Image (cartoon, rainbow, N blue to C red; front, top):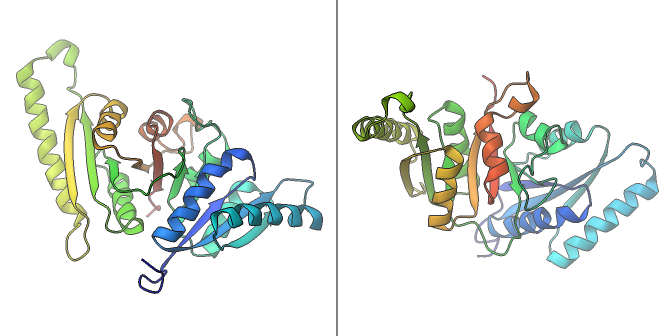
Length: 280
């Protein structure tokens, strides 16, 4: 579908450090800009000591060369200063609906290294962050969303359905039986399953994903750890995008984006849409 038939209403900002690991997220950003469609903005923040005109020209030329290979136009913004602050500031100034970024390493557990700019962006950004791990061979065609029935996870799902309008969404909840080492029984497990199912039904109803243009919604609850249950659903459905809400606190570094969110980002092999709920 051409852009004249489907007018551009969204803006994607891709944050790049110009290293080889940024090839995958840049290809995904270009693909999304064409398919949503959306305006593409590419931001690079110069490191300390590289603020001269030559550094700006070199960074711009590098980005333009990759854009040419993608047959894509974009607004290029070169910033100076703190990486995290400038990325978020630039995304807000251009009205970005989505920040696209890559992981520190590809194909290994612990992709989201504690204390890296990416972790800090996810923690501080009011704009959803798409963490790209894989090559952009195909479009996204299904959203798998992990939920613990919290407000942040509901917010994440709503944001995802707005960014990727029309894509079906599959909502997943994993549950455990409290004190199961002492109280385990099949009857008790089924009682908790029923309780979780009723919570899921209520949660989906409160999302109010109805009306014209609303996505197709499916859901499931399963016994087990969140990471394992979500991974099983991803494999069964052959999905390549997982949605999570982040709600960690700034106290202990390991909890900056929430323990469940960190586990999923590290463990799940798909691209991740991480959404932070704005403080009330």
